[in-house]
Image (cartoon, rainbow, N blue to C red; front, side, top):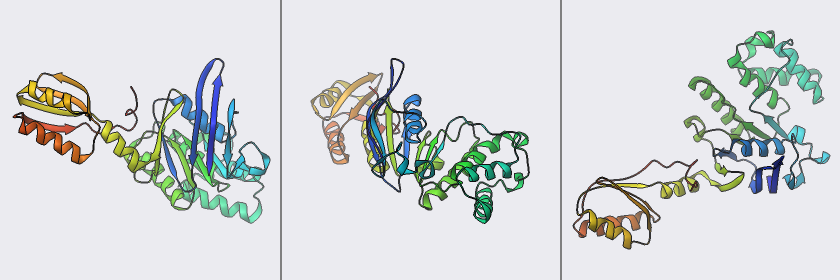
Length: 301
C-alpha cells in the first residue's frame, strides 16, 4: 500500500499540497484528476523520492519512502512529465546502463533488456542512437526505462503528453498489460476513453486539496448526481418553479427562456416522484435530461 499521511508541500510562500491524506491499495490503478497540475505532479514526485514533503509522511508498505530499507528505487518507477536521455547512446546501450545501475548484469541483463524492448515495441531501434529516433518514440523509450527493474508501483505524470490517438491507445494497452501483470499504477492524466477501461479508482485534486477519492463506480455515481438537470417547460412555468422550490432535494434553480436548470440530489426513485408531481400539477414538459457527468469539475464551487 502507498499511503500519503497528512502531507503538505510548499514552494516559497505558496502551498502546493495542503494536508493531503490518501491510501492507495496494492493492485489499484488510480487516476488523478482536476486542474491542479502542480499539486498532482508534486505528490508523484514526493512518492518517488524526488522531492521532500514539508509536513506529513509517505509510506510504502508501512515504511517511509525515504528510508533505505524500503528499497523504493526498485519498488517505485516514476515517469515525469518531462524527461531527457543520453542522446549519444544507442537504445541498447542506454538500457544496459540503467540495468547496471540496478546491479542487473550478465544473462539476467540480456534477458530483461530483450523483454522490455519487445514490450515497448522498440526492438527495431535497438542499435539506433537515441538522438536519431523519432520523437514520438520517446514516451515508450522512457516507459521501458522505468519498468526495467520490474517495479511494483508505476507513478506516471501526464504520460500521454501530445500523443495522437493511435499512440495513446498503444500506451494505454501497455499500461493495462502491466496492471494485469500485478503492477499498481497512479496516473496523472485526463480520463481518456483508452484508460477508463482499467482505472479502478479516482482522486480529484483542487488547489492542493483532495476533493474526492474512491472507486470509479462510486465517484461516477456521485458525479451524476452533481450534474445539472435541464428541463424544457412548455406551459405552467410558475407551477413548475413552485414544485421545484418545495422539493428539499432540488437546489440551484435557474431559468433560461423555457428551460429550467437545477441540481437534484436524490436517487432514481426520488427523481421519478418529482417528475410525477410536476405532471400531476399540470406542467407540460418536453425534455428532461441530465448533463453528462464531469468527474473533473463536479466538486468545484
